[in-house]
Amino acid sequence: MVSLFSVSLFPFTPQNALSPSTKFAPADASTTNSFCIKPRIEHRKVVCACVAPPRNFKSDESSAIKFNGSSKSEHLHTIRDPEDDSDVLIECRDVYKSFGEKKILNGVSFKIRHGEAVGIIGPSGTGKSTVLKIIAGLLAPDKGEVYIRGRKRAGLISDEEISGLRIGLVFQSAALFDSLTVRENVGFLLYENSSMSEDQISELVKESLAAVGLKGVEDRLPSELSGGMKKRVALARSIIHDTTNNSIEPEVLLYDEPTAGLDPIASTVVEDLIRSVHIKGRDAVGKPGKIASYVVVTHQHSTIKRAIDRLLFLHKGKIVWEGMTHEFTTSTNPIVQQFASGSLDGPIKY
Ligand SMILES: Nc1ncnc2c1ncn2[C@@H]1O[C@H](COP(=O)(O)OP(=O)(O)OP(=O)(O)O)[C@@H](O)[C@H]1O
Image 1 (cartoon, rainbow, N blue to C red):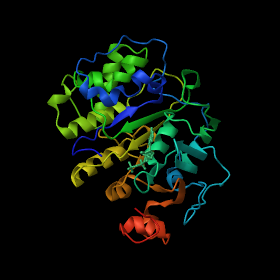
Image 2 (spheres, helix red, strand yellow):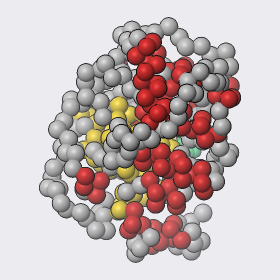
Image 3 (cartoon, rainbow, N blue to C red):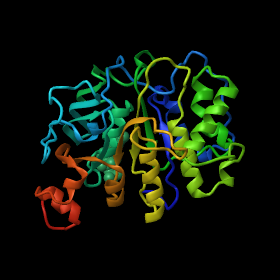
């Protein structure tokens, strides 16, 4: 879907979805050379949305392997009480979605817990990106519910619902704003949505760039960066957040095919960056990452192995299998076996 080195990590935030005119601005940015940073909007406190009050998270290291999603794992890890949902950040419950006559999601249920690195895999056109958009609040389900930290989301995201959890959608094909410097690109959402001073934003931009291993590039334009540097800048933009906002804001990042079209080494760079900004990782300056949980839609084996702990397999509108990444290649489920081996024979028909 994307050409080599065109993958760009950019946060699409539900707040941007409020206005159809602004919705896809970042993705179109590379073609909008006359773009300028707009005057600050003083009353928007956070850069992206979601509902629900802070909950008491469990930050133990084993949380990534503890889950009780709706479909049965091959080997359930029952270290914690299966009824304990206090660490669930996002839940899709029996979600349906059609486009016209085309039924895409047909009762999708799963939970994303604090600390998890989850992958959504499955055949092309099965609705993986649709799931991400529903989680992000860009699309509303026809039926079923999305819960954000235990609170049911009503319709799409709105300003009134903002509190508690930031959700960012990182498009595979989005580009940096050509006419903005690296500083303006990385700090874009803070310039637009926070009441932070220019100096505060500059400092945060510097820190975010350092977290992805970049220094002294703030005044450059995207055209002065290599492809790999652009990806790092875009990731820095996805992790920056308003530190003057007092509400607790763990962040969930949703990556839509972040390594599609990349060569194996470039894929590894992106996979490691995704890991490094997670709370269980260490960023480029050795600090713990800030992303509480992330979800990756991917077709790439290397990304599954390197950046994902738990997998959800979407097929014919439902989660038909879920399990830990190491269970993927040893599964006896015929759908998973066929997908893992790439065989033409099996239950998945093209
Ligand atoms: N806004 C839309 N309007 C109409 N049809 C849509 C829309 N969005 C997605 N679809 C259709 O829904 C189906 C699922 O699309 P989606 O992009 O979610 O699949 P996917 O599993 O991510 O696919 P791939 O792996 O090929 O990227 C496709 O047939 C697509 O054409």
